[in-house]
Amino acid sequence: MSGSTITLSSTSGGVPVVVESIPGSQSAAFMIGVATGSRDEHPGIFGLSHLLEHTVFRETETRNSYQMAKEMEGAGGELNAFTGREMTAFYGITIKETAATAMDMVGDIVANPKINEEDTELEKKIVLQELSMIRNEPDSYIHDLFESTLWRGHPLCQDEGGDEKIVAGLTSADLRAYYEEKYRIPNLAVYAAGSINVDDTVRWAEETLDGMSGGQRNPRSPPQTPGSEYRFVKGDAEHCHVAMGFPSYGASHPDRMAASMVSAVLGSGTSSRLFQAVREKKALVYSIYSTVSQNSDASSLTSYMSCTDRNVVEAMETVASVVSQFLREGLEKGELERAKRLVKGANVRSMESTEHRLYRLGVNHMLNGSTETLEERLARIDAVTEDDVMRVAQDLLREDRLNTVVLGKGNREIRNYDASALTL
Image (cartoon, rainbow, N blue to C red; front, side, top):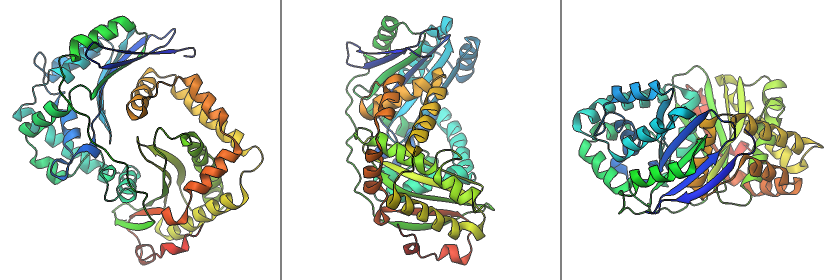
C-alpha cells in the first residue's frame, strides 16, 4: 500500500475531511472523530464520554443495534468506536463496493442517536463489566495506573473508562446534555482511508454533519512537569507489573521522533538494551518493553515489565542502571540505525492495514493537525541523528522526573521500597 495520497478538504460548514487514497485497496474505511475525551470531563461525570460512545450504538432514529449489525456485516464490514483521553471516534470499514453502507452507518450513529433511558441502563451494565475486566487484567491496568500517577492533579490522569461509581449513577439526560454540547462543529472531523472517492466523502460529510453546529472547543491546558514518585498498588495477580517512566513531549514538538528513538533504543524488540540486560542476562522478568504514549500537549516515555515479587527490586534497579549507562556512554556503533529500521518496519507492516491507516490518520490529525503520509513519517525517522537522540535523552531521562508504579501482591520490601535507590 505504498504511494498513497492524503487530501485535506472541508465541508461548507467547516468540518475537516481528511482522505488517504490507497492505490489498489479493496476496502474503504470511514471515521467521524469528536474532539472530546476523558481529559475533558469534570469529576462528577468521569466516564461519561466512554458510556456515551457505547450507548449511541444501541439505537438511532432509523435502526436498532441488531439492524445495524445485519446491515454492516451484510456489507462485509465492521462498525466500531473508541474513546481516548482527547477524542472519541466512530468508524466503519467495508469492502470497497459497499463503501456507501459504511458511510451511512457511521453517520447515523453520530448524527441520529436516540440515547434513551432503557438503552443507557443496558449499556451501563456492559461498561461496568468492562471496567471490572480491565482491573482484572494487570498487563493493561498498569498503563492506566502509570498515567494517573504521572499526571496526578491534571485531567490527563483520567483514564478513558472512568470511575465505576460515577458511571453507575449517570442517566440518559446526562448523556444527551453532553452529546448536545460536545458533538458539534468545531469538534467534528471526518477521516477516510482505502479505496475512497474524495468528492463523495465530502458530500456525505456535508449532508450528515453540517447541521450540527454551535459547539465550542474544550478548554485545555498542558500539565506541569511532574516530579518523581514511587507508588505501590495492591493487586491479586501472582506476577507484579511495573511501569517506570518520564514525562515527554507533546504531539507537535519537533523532537517527538527523537524521543521515540530513545524509547526504541531502550526497549523496542529483543535486541534492545532493557530486554538484553533485564531478561536475557539476568532472567529477572517475563516481559519488558518501552513505549511512548502520546497526547497533544504531553506524552510519557515508559518501560513496562512483569516479574515475580522476588525479582521486582533487582529488575527496577537494573532498568535504572541501563538508563544511567546509556546517558553516560551514549549510543553504540550502529545502534540507532538498528532502532530506526525496527521502528520503520513496524510502521510499514502496520500500514498494510486500512484500519490502522484510518486510526493513525484520525489520531494524528486530531492531536496536532498532521496529515503525514507513511513516506513522510519514514523520512522523519531517517532524519533523526545520534546527537538528537542523546540531546533528547539528557533532557527527558532525569532522576527527578522518574515515576514508578508497581502493581501486585507485593512483599514488604516492595511496599516500603525507597525509590531514591533508582539513581540515574
